[in-house]
Length: 385
Image (cartoon, rainbow, N blue to C red):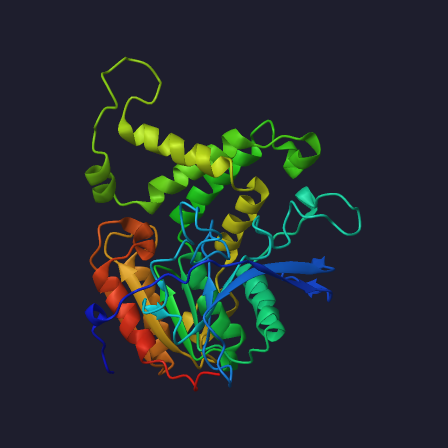
C-alpha cells in the first residue's frame, strides 16, 4: 500500500455549499411492516462525479448528524459541516478525487421526511404516527438515493458510530454496490449498557409533560426539558473520564454558593449543550434514532453468529477504534474484524490512542487522519469526467 505525505498538501475547504432534495413517489416498505407512501431525502455533494461514476463516497451520519458534512452555507456561518476537518480538497477524504455525498436520514429533522413532516394522508404533521425506523431502512432509502444520482456502485461508504453501523449494513444488504467500507468507532450491535443509556434518554423525553405522546406539534410546544436531559446524558457518554477531567476537572465557575445552580464548569457545559440541542433538534427524531441503534443486530437472524451474517459481503474494510472510547470500545471493532476475517475478506484495522472518548472520531487527530488519508488514497477510481 503506497503512502502519501500530508505535509506536502494544502488542505482547503469545499467552500460554499447548498443542500438538495430528492423526492421519491414510490412507497418505501419498512422493516417494521409500515409503509411510507412517499418521502424526501435531503443531501449535499462535494467534488465531481467522474465519467464512469466510480468515485462516489457516501457519508452516513451518527445520531445527531445531518447531511451537512462539509463547507458552509454562507461566508458568515460560524461553523462548517460536522466532518469538515475530514472532507475537502487535499483533506483525508479528498474531493479532488472523490464525489462525496452526505444525506440526512429518514426520520431526521433537517429536511428529510420525518415526524415533523406533513403526512400526505392527514395533511398534519406525522408526529406519533411516524413509523419507527431501522438501520436497514436507512440503507434501503440511501440505495434509492444512489439510484437517483445514477450511481450503481459506491467507491466507499464511510461512517462513525451509528454511521458505522450503516456502512456495515450497506455491505450486507448491497454487497455488489460497495467496494470499500470505513467503519469507525462503531459496533455490530449495542451492549446492554448502551441500550440502558438510550432508554433513560428516551424516558426523559417521553415523560416530559409537553411531549403529548409525540404530538406536541399540534400543541405548539416542545418537550425541551426532556430533550435537554437526554442530550446531557449523551454528552457524558461521548467523552472519556480523562477528557472530562482535562477539560473541566473540578473547576468552579466562581465561589461555592451552596446552591443547585451550575457552580462547576462541567455543570455549566452540560447545561449549555443540553439547551443548545433542545433548541435545534426534534424530540421525535431523537427517539427514533436511538431506537434504530437498539434494534441493529445483523447477527440476530443467525443465532448471534456475526461471521455467518457477513458471509455474502464482498467489500474491503478499514475499521478504526479509539483507546478511550468506552461506549464503542475497541473490543467491539475486534468482533467485526474477526467476523470479516472468518470470511477471508480484506481488512485493515487501526486502534488509535486518543483521549477524547467516543467523540474522537470527529476530531482532527493527525494519526487518525493519516490512517484515513492513506487508506482512501489507495482506493482506485476511474478518470475524471
